Amino acid sequence: MLESYYSQGKLSDSDPLVREVLQLDEHNPDPNNEGLPQDLILAAQFAMAKGRYESTEPLLQQALDFYEKKYHGGTINEVGALENLAFAFGRLGNWQGADVVS
Image 1 (cartoon, helix red, strand yellow):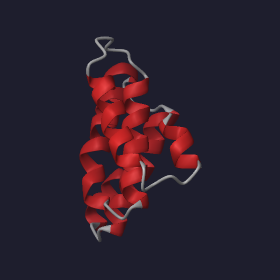
Image 2 (cartoon, helix red, strand yellow; image 1 turned 30 degrees about the vertical axis):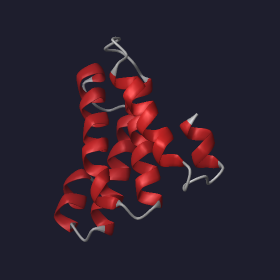
Image 3 (spheres, helix red, strand yellow; image 1 turned 180 degrees about the vertical axis):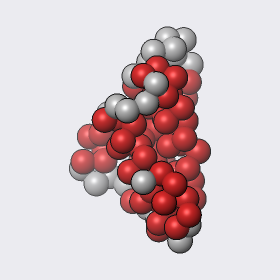
């Protein structure tokens, strides 16, 4: 559902939906819930689209932690999360942070 909101550019309507989706993901007892990291990345992309770059690091770090635990690194999804994190760091002027993740 988040993907359709994002692709339709419904940024102003997204905050309640993002919160609800992340709450549902947190209450999902399945430790292999692939939806959680994907929703975290989308939530970070919504935040970046609204200029809220500082709020993206915890979301993306949580997604990265999931991928590291499950796949031990090196997946395309992990690369996407790293790319988003480097972009957010760059927009915040945190060039050291952006350099570390790139």
